[in-house]
Image (cartoon, rainbow, N blue to C red; front, side):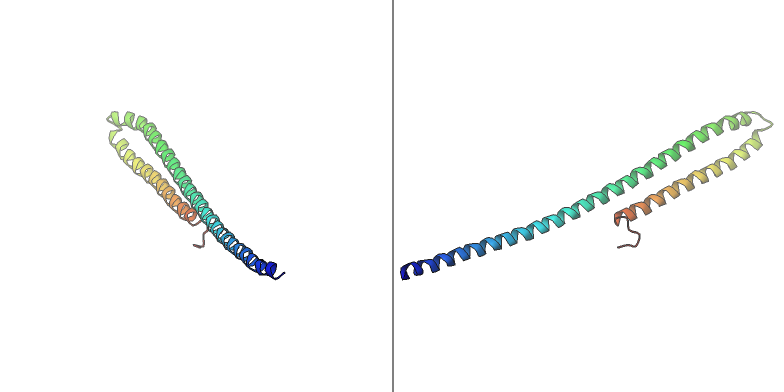
Length: 137
């Protein structure tokens, strides 16, 4: 039995060393998997933020394009009566004065709509860039 006992000790020790080495490798792999999961989560959050910011930019561009289109149609429609009144000598001076007031007012209104749209877009992009939080965290 002593010869068997002499062999069992080193074999058991060898098996224990193999088990310990395997457990270290498993532990390392679990740690790496955890790191990979955290990295994947961060990447997904970044991608969602990028998509949200891009969506805000598209909405801002659509509102700006719509505002620009309405402004152009408004101006084209206003050109008709101002053109007719401007062609008639008795109404030319008054028509031109009214047209200047109209054009400045319309430009101011459309400019204000554009400015509010840009500001709203900037705020939305800033909020989306923080993950939608308004407290800055």
